[in-house]
Image 1 (tube, protein in one colour):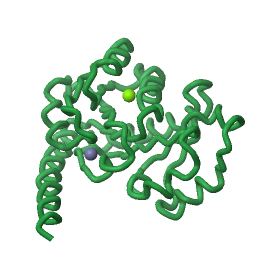
Image 2 (tube, protein in one colour; image 1 turned 180 degrees about the vertical axis):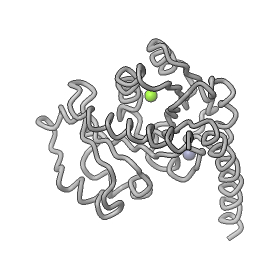
Image 3 (cartoon, helix red, strand yellow; image 1 turned 60 degrees about the horizontal axis):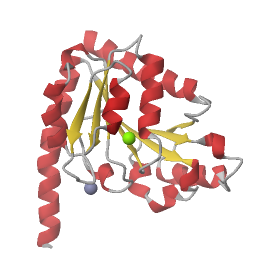
Length: 222
Ligand code: MG
Ligand code: ZN
């Protein structure tokens, strides 16, 4: 019982910081994405392809939740502002980490903030960061049972990408089974099968994201 209370208090304090961050983002007219996936699911690859496609039409900044600079350097090479959110080896980002990292980015010159969470399908789902959109990336090699094993992650998704669909012919992945698991948890969630390798499916995801960013700017100008 007391342990549950401690966890509740931590999440409460986290949510208060997240709410402040959300207010700041809204005042600036920045849409923030929280990108979550297993390690190796393709978070950085999806982020890089998204930036390459949209960087001439939207001002994009990136936060990398990590302990090493590898992904930061990859993203920086695309010519967009990027900062490392030092997780100190933690298995998820929290609102305080994100809030502390905001001053490292030119926030008043951004339309879209992409936050790459720590690779983990469990606890990142429990922590509000102040972001607007939960983007969950599953991938074909991880198997078709992920929605059944990690329900909280899939229930909380606003958008679901299924990456590495180019491997579908080589792996026994039942798309119907996967989709059924998702539909039970999160009916009607925006779903985009994609391949970072071939570019297949990216246009639909990019159109969804363009519309989401436009919606934000329209609200901000009103
Ligand atoms: Mg990465
Ligand atoms: Zn964690």
